[in-house]
Length: 277
Image (cartoon, rainbow, N blue to C red; front, side, top):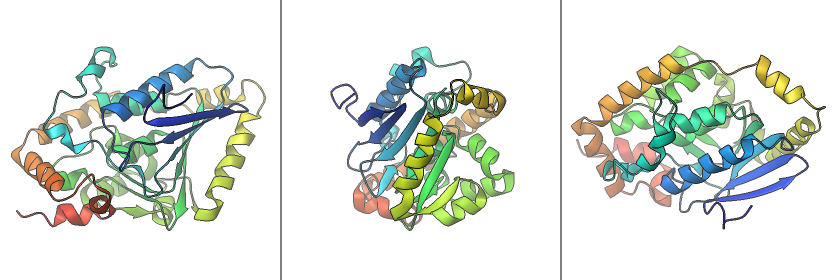
């Protein structure tokens, strides 16, 4: 599988493991192209019985997935092409998270850069995440744009870290380093950056080598929680905020001041907090 099939992804396979490298310059924003490629890839791999593990990483050492494309404010119908086959009761961003959560293969994120907003939601929807100390960052930044997470983030995060810390992350809208994310339970483990590849590779290979049926049995026994009601509440909260004037002002202001550029994304929280009132 190459860029010819998935323009924003590099995909390789070896010994029951698919390695997926996100490559959507400049900062791996979750736009229509990346959304389409991730949806198509995950769907294509679902029925592949020879595949045991999917490892996600980024071609950009600074950014895993920056966040959902903020230019959605100007093109609210940009993701309509995905609406036809959405499961009942979820929006297009939630559908991506649910597709990942229910993937039959074990999904592992190798987090060596920043994941905010929709990027953090993707990370939290995966089965496991290992974060590089000194390099990884994760945060739900939506409140600084006048909205709340709308791609499963409120539900996935509460399941990982508990309601009190989920509220801290959503309303505090800070970027959490690898050690804090590990302590909160947001990621499996914080790992020295120079050991991240080895730790994830060893785990992926060990899982891929398990006897037939073990992975399916474990994922059936440790099943994802049914979040249907929570996802509906989240969508209503997100959509209601997105329609308010403050959301449009903050998102447009963020774009005008450098959001979705490399320099602007390095301290997006500071950029958004510094916007004129």
